[in-house]
Length: 613
Ligand code: F6R
Image 1 (cartoon, rainbow, N blue to C red):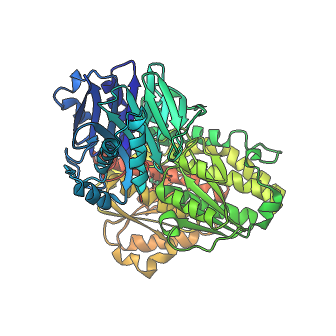
Image 2: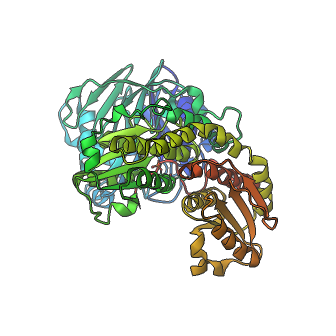
Image 3: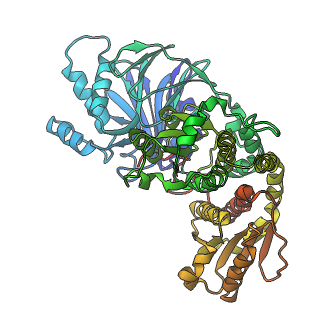
């Protein structure tokens, strides 16, 4: 939520900042702004609307400063407007700040500052930050050369909540300070200077060498130097990390949208995620996990906790773990889990799935589980992300950067990784027949090829999309694993096409929802479990009788002509079927949204990384 960018170096900052904001726009896109320093004066240019609007602001082309900060906003406090856009300055216009996160005690801080004569021009929580920095700065009458840093540190000590901030001051025109707590921030070392951003893909064009800031760690950049300080302002050295993602991974590479590109990248994403972890005739390799047999044998309960699509991947993860390892698994939504006092102890393993690794609720749920004595395992796509730094164990999907707000390749990669992890646990625990495991491995290795067949349904899916794109309500139904996929298909459709959609377990239809089925309503069914096909077909007939249009995704040979569209996918192990059956649903959401002429990659009200509660 919200994207921040910064640059200090040899080049003019403004174009670099706008470029960075454009790359980060998936984090928020209701207003944007930049600040740069010229002739010892901070120039702020900002407005509501998309990043591209910045180019229309008079004088922006004349900004020549080589230091600057920038922001693309996802509004929390105060509607999208010029006043509420970042950067924000203190009353004396000495300090400028961009901020990602939420300051929970901003009302209290605003009152404190108002009582001390400060005025506020916006409704944002952020505006307290530059004013607090100014308050501490003016209170310090010393001529300490670290006075700027000290004031930033004092101000951040007062803040409750989450923040990643960048600060400029006209008194220190060659210096930028950044700090974070529970909100992402990375610093890239480029050939012409330092680039700061909320996440790595936005900077791949400039560098692959990154400093990943820890909570309450301060970075002070001045000309071509960088210094790091801990929360007591003691200076320390910091390791630079080389991130392997190719620069082109964050580009559209000829596709019309990131979402389409990412849907079509799934064979590669799965291949990369399997990597060398799984080979036929050999035990799975998670040696980097360092989980002992003794510990695994002691686990009597597993929680899988995540949000949105990642939680849906967890539902399939539960099936793997319960089937192969015989350990009961509960899947929960992170925002519920963290406040419901879950029963956890040292015999509980808690798995947290997060593509971004920055989702506030998932991180909070992880911290809670740790505090109750459980071991925690993070599944993430972003190296060094916050969740991976908190967890006892981390495993990575290797899906490459996911830029479209709607998650696609991360979902299928998460399922594959949970599948391989379950096989690995089962091998250690000897909880499944080795032949069953070997067959499953073979099926996992065949997935990339079979995904191609799912992708080949694109024309049939597009035809159906053209028929139903102006629907108001759509239902998704399925049983077992197919129900889990129905949940994901429904989420995909509603988030990008704004069509109201619901997912139900097919057997639940008669317990209420079927009352909504009437002439012309679209019902999408997933049918991959041969043991349940007949029952599911009966449910579909019931909705057809009531006038529904039907779209079926199946791997079965269904001889029935009264469905409006049947899309055929490949057969696989039933545990893996969600990876193949979700793809036509991703494509359906995509083509319906295109048909409606909407922005597929940046749906309204959403942001890629939900770093606030
Ligand atoms: C939906 C979607 C979201 C995310 C959710 C969790 O397409 O992308 O539902 O899955 O916000 O995000 P991560 O995985 O980054 O924790």
